[in-house]
Amino acid sequence: MSGPQPHRALPPELLASPEWREACRVRDFGRIFRLVKVKAGIYPSRIAALCGMTPSRVGEIMAGRRSLAHIDVIERVADGLRIPGAMLGLAHRPWEIPQPVRTRGSVPEPEPQAAHEPVTEAVPSDGFDDLMALADGQVNRSTLAALRSSVEDYWRRDDQHGGAPLRPAVVGHLRYVTQLMTGADSALRNDLQSLAAELARLAGWAYFDARQYSTARTYFAQALSLSRGQGDRLFIANVLSCMSLQATYDGNPMDAVALACKAQDMARSAGGQPLVMSMLHMREAFAHATLRDAASCHQALDRSRDTYEHGRGREDEAPSWVRYFDETKLVVDTGIALARLGEAARAEPLIAEGLRREKAGQQRGRAFHAFWLASTQLQQGKLDEACRSAGLALELTASIDSPRVAGHVQEFQRRLGPYAREAPVLAFEQRMRERLG
Image (tube, rainbow, N blue to C red; front, side):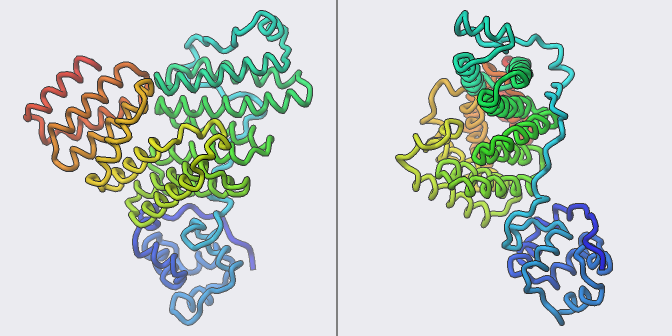
């Protein structure tokens, strides 16, 4: 008997249906096979070929005369039919995570519109000796520290002004660090590779913020490849969390769930740092909310809160890249997950509280959260309040360069269509024309 044959993913609407999810939860493979036949058009003979079974055995399972109990057979069915492992109570399957794009050792080129933008601030200018060393293509511990300082500055500027304008500088910086790796000794090369992984993640994030998702995936894949060479499982989990959030935005919530769960597996294998785990459970909650899976979303939110509380007072032990996920972020992200789920009344006070706590310098975050506050208020019919909150988002959006946030504001404006003649809407649209043209 031949092994399983390649198979495309099952239809998203089947995977999201309550009937399917319940059949998987109780491991009712007779019902699973019948649903696959009816909803996906995969007949018993094909099911048998995909799962490494005989057609007669598949027929007996569908008729209820046989069941599946051996874990190796259940895993074979999950792999053959592309059923996410979590649905069957299994570990996440290897095929659930996209493989990194092979880059042949080179840095992927940016989008054409970015290629002609000037590359600015790609090299730090902290000291004369460092600049001379960099000009000669050399690197030492001092210049490495200067390079890292530039990356930290990029993240601050991303938070304050949006990631889109950083793309040419980050890509140039990434290319430069990659070139330095070729002539560095083994110890410095290892540190440079870690720095390159962080720059690739930052490039992916900047393109994600610019809503150029294909290019973002390329850089995230490069970050994964570089970080695997370092064996830094927490950082790999971080990259996967970025990819999960992008999949949620890109209309692939099932992929987003799988990526978030894979990130959690990776973080657990590195000790399960509480703050990292809390952030990753929140990513999973976002994906479940997009699927309108209320039970799974609330479970993920509970895990996010519980692990955050478990790590309270130990934030200094967490990697620097996750320390943005503080109590304020936990509160506001919980509200956003509930808003995505459609539970506007519960979401509104959480988002409002988070927005009240946020620092004035966090321009993009405040604009993003003001949009979600407006969205929850509109869902509840609070038109005046919704337009005021959207006005705040509009004011903040005008001072940052984040197509992702600007897209949210424009989405909100489209949702105001049924109220086009109402005074608050007319006033908001006038402000929008003045600010955004």
